[in-house]
Length: 142
Image 1 (cartoon, rainbow, N blue to C red):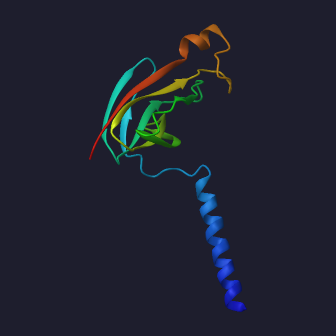
Image 2: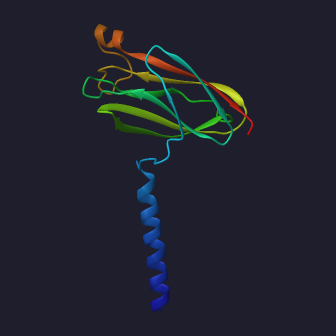
Image 3: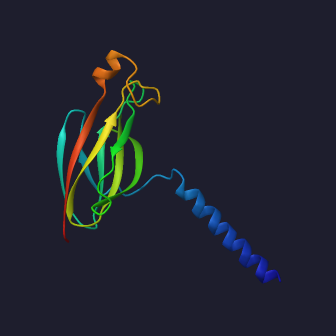
């Protein structure tokens, strides 16, 4: 009976630790980092199986708020997570993906400047400072 309880406790502990790691845990491997910016279209060329991140400058104190507007074709790449980090005293947001199969797709990131959680800019200034970063993805076979 004592061994059974120890075994159950071990299983529960592993389950709890695993569940804790999934929700909002930082990704340690960003893979190939491709930098983009509002108003720019950037080509991204990868091989299937590669992890990659789309990086955009992000100054939350100034009002930046990046979101993933258009997911890539699910057969070409899969979204893993959104990571906010500091890089050389500036904020950077990384959208992390895995390249899956050969093909092309477009990924759109949108910065709604000072939108306060809304998806539409509330003022003319917000509309003028908001914008998209576009990434044209091409995945080739290994």
